[in-house]
Image 1: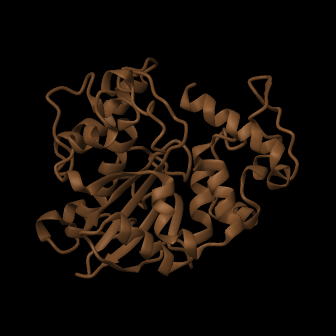
Image 2: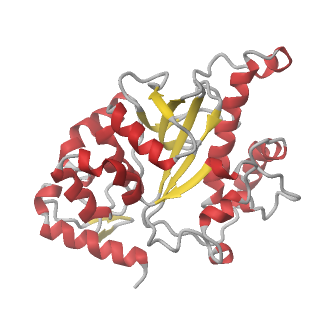
Image 3: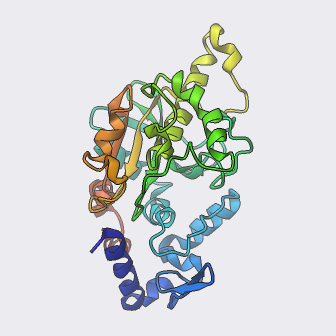
Length: 324
């Protein structure tokens, strides 16, 4: 049985066995005029009750667009929110989790996001300036938007961007995003090729056409890496006269380093297309980076292991049953 089918069956079973978790939503939600048992009638029922109202309020307050498939029990966006929303204001727990992820760096403090108050984890985060030539930036929609972001300070006083890309049952086939019809492929190359070739974070490609950078899930990682790099470059631009032309006052983030966390269930072996599947995704993507240690793949259960005992029993029971 494939991982995606296994998880679909698990979620459908939970919908019946733990009906109160989902406010007795019977499933049978509609997608393209067809009803499916793993789609909820109300997408809010996909969120754990202990954080549901906070999550809904947060997305509304920050004008964040929920993904089209937020009513899908296999939604990775919802999985991310169900894990991280409940600790977003708890500095001690987040630091404990981060330091377990990155033993070579000691994180000592967290910074609130520039345009959000009282939160140390932001969701569907975009930059203040359009560093990737994407036009209008709207959180969660049609631009490079991070599933989650943590903004941290290490023991040396360096500011870190910690983008979090969250996956659940995603599986990708070979599809060159740079060759997509209708002008979409050309638009992507126009946006990103020059940034890739001049990048100090990504290894340059001899040719853009057919590049791993335009294959999912690497296409997402490429854009997120460039996103972090441009913010770090603009931070240095503020203090180096020769880079002043690159400075954009619309950007509120400042950073010296990046740690890119990719949360993927260990059992999901289908995350990369067959062409690349001979090697783990972590090894594949690290091979594209100037600093391989800036990227880590972590299973969601392992991510939460250092803080599991500090969280409520009901929440942990929920996460374990749904995702671990």
